[in-house]
Length: 211
Image (cartoon, rainbow, N blue to C red; front, side):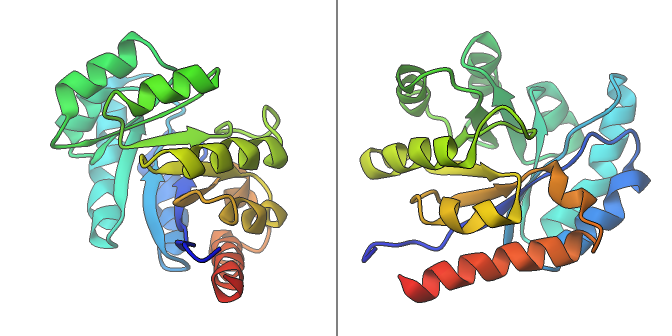
């Protein structure tokens, strides 16, 4: 643990249909912990409506010192003033995002099917790799931690480990991942997102104190 680097938080929003539905929660989360990035997901297909949501939230997120990413749509990221894109899956969409957005904007990738795909993505100038699913149920925290530990030990490209429960944050922070993502379930915490983020931040602080 001598080379431990304290992870920062990465927020994964629940799908939003309008800015007002998610903006207060995002603002509260940004004030409750060291948030590096917000992945803004959508519950609508209309491009104009998505652009409106991004334009409404980008100044708030960026003003707090975090990056705002959108899923799988490099053109939207460029048009709406987002900081970049998160692509699910290694394929043509990822290649197109790299070509159109780099180096001005961030291109991250998740939903990698194998270690071989992860290595190919890392060699393709991705800004980060994500381990763990965006929504709960597909991956266990143990499996996510194992993949993040493997990656962090061997490669320099940053990685994100996704947590869906507060109890998982400390385990993932110990994996070597540079970022611990808080999945959309955190936004449904009955105490409010600020309390959930503050608790996650406290877990990161405990890991740093023991390092």
